[in-house]
Amino acid sequence: MTHAITVIEIIHASGLNPAAIGNELVLDGNSEREGVRAISDYLQSIAGGINGANVRVRVDSSTDADVPATGTCTLGSADIVADDTVLIGSVTLTWKADGSGSEDQVTLSTTEATAATNLAAAINAHTKLVGVVTASVASAVVTVTSDQDPRSAIHINTSRTETNSGSVTWGGANLTTASTLAQVADGVTYTMGG
Image: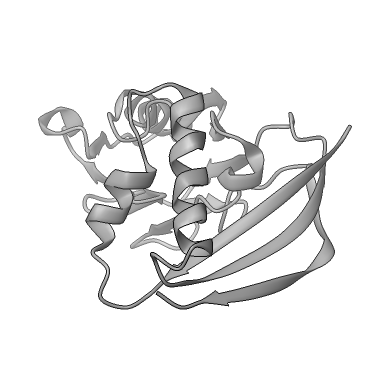
């Protein structure tokens, strides 16, 4: 299935408080209708000259938007050591002899399959990753699957630091999806003074 996606980017005039703009446009806990109305009202304030901004609009096309973004992390035969790390988005998980001291820690293991199981458990329990990604294990491979729209989830980065080369390998620098995204209409920028 193909979906049309209209991307609206607002570059606000200098001097505006980002937190205040966020409070005006991102209405947590309100209905979807109220949130869309707040965005509409803000665009009207730009069009009416109340707020200055550059507004860029483009139209993209996406196929198979229901295919989740995934990434694989393979635990190799080289030993993982304490203080090696795995990064998913903004969360850094650090390998420790006993990883129970913090949600940012993963318990080391001398077997790849157990290390993979420990990593998946740490990912699934981390409060910043719940609702963002879910991890599953097959032998020594952890598959991280996005719980979000794949068109935005492909921006979740994945990396690691390792002492012994080959101890941890990601399949890519970001989660990937079978969904395709293509620009179908050139973007245009409207400059509105305030």
